[in-house]
Length: 312
Image (cartoon, rainbow, N blue to C red; front, side, top):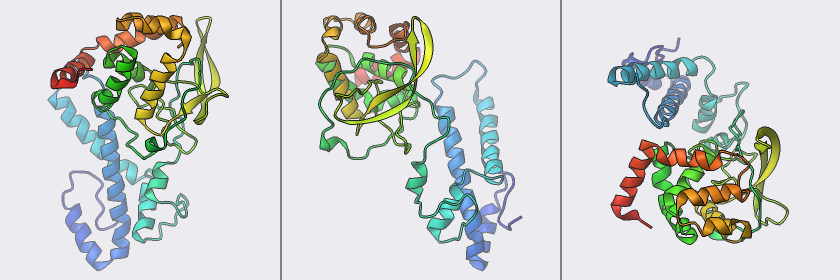
């Protein structure tokens, strides 16, 4: 075992040993530095996954969370010392080490590594009609954070964009946010391009031959006569979440089939009208969105956003 190595996370002398080892053999210590960084990354990833739960279980308490955190930290160490995620090899290359193992990828940066497609990524679960709207504007193609984290963060970050789009449609922002939450699994099942980048498609709008913008083809589920059938479909891709909200508003406003929905002043009627007009093939589409709106956790965040002076 490398002198600075630690097989359990409670070994607090690892940093001191690593410092001494780096002074004696900086090249040799690089391997351990890369592995420890990968371990920290793994711990952060596990913590984010835990925090993504909308609510706590019946058996959750301070004691169970304490032991769960201990387990996650030990799991991160175990994974990084038994094959790891491959991040350590990439990091060693960036820091000047050879890192030339079988899993190393020549010429890649850390950002390139993050962009690699993830096997088994989630896919969208509905189909919608398509009508062309304006092509993406150049000002929307600047990079923005793709991950939305927890449901609470999803609601807070997208609230200003939802408010703007909802004002055009005569609806409340929370209705649009709940719809986007259903479409994307609170942002975790976002449609992605072949290189792993986000399409920023929050509303599952398809792209037909008339769509002038970017597009991405992925597997999806269509409901045919009430039965879910797996198909491949092409969806619109945007440069930002703001662009996705604007296109959604234009999409609904410019399709005559959605006129009954636009005339609805109530969110429930709006969603039911969208479903009846063919926006979604899922027979329980509106019901599922309303269920999200009725969750206590959703209501709590929405009420906070409204009380903070963010009403449309």
